[in-house]
Length: 110
Image 1 (cartoon, rainbow, N blue to C red):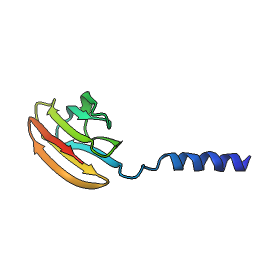
Image 2 (image 1 turned 60 degrees about the vertical axis):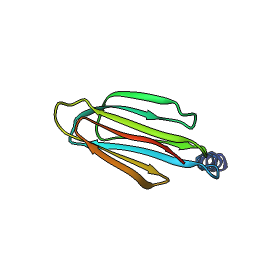
Image 3 (image 1 turned 45 degrees about the vertical axis):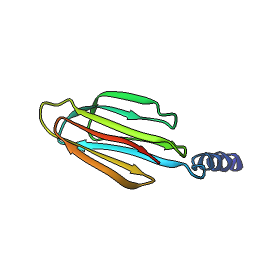
């Protein structure tokens, strides 16, 4: 029985590893605003998803294939406050922006 438990745990960890050349993309939205509408690329195919009326802080990540691109747009849904957007690749922050009404980090190809 212990063998099967270790086998299942080992398969889980092995399947979570990234393929060579792939990149971990992470978006993080914080700020003094309470809520925001966030539009972001959410997979290697470039699919965009709209997350409406999200509470902050908000974080999303995915594993992207080589040659992929990323984009995030944040609109402050609160009447007050600001939004801060942090964009990272493989744990390294590559872009940050702050705004009161909206923030856009344009496409980044990697």
